[in-house]
Length: 124
Image (cartoon, rainbow, N blue to C red; front, side):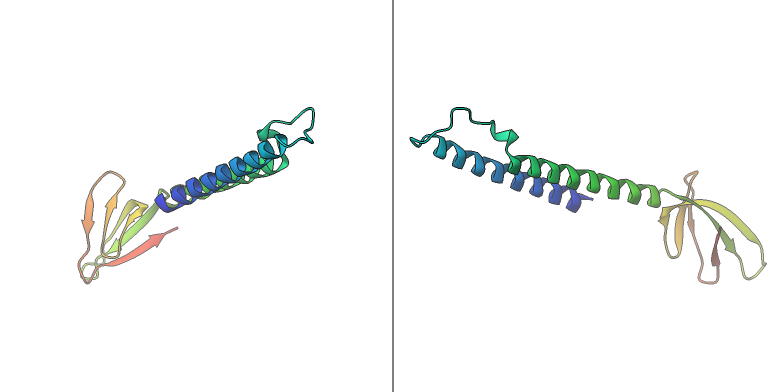
């Protein structure tokens, strides 16, 4: 998540730098003797508009991907632990992000560690 945020900030910074460079060029052209009477604002130039649209798309797509990953990680699963010695089955509710190989934490906060003989099944 931090990587995606840094990429977004980097892209936004590049867009700002490009927009400032374009603005500096347009100001330099405006100081030449063949100057237009009405100069449009730097933020209304086509390059700046495309840059803002691109930055908006990048930010929205990063937010969307982050949201979907969050939803996926917090999905509640039903996990069934089978004890091979007695054959008893115990059902737990577990968030996907708290489900490990041999241990997990239930929704109500209990930490369950499994023995080498215990079998875990995900109930759909």
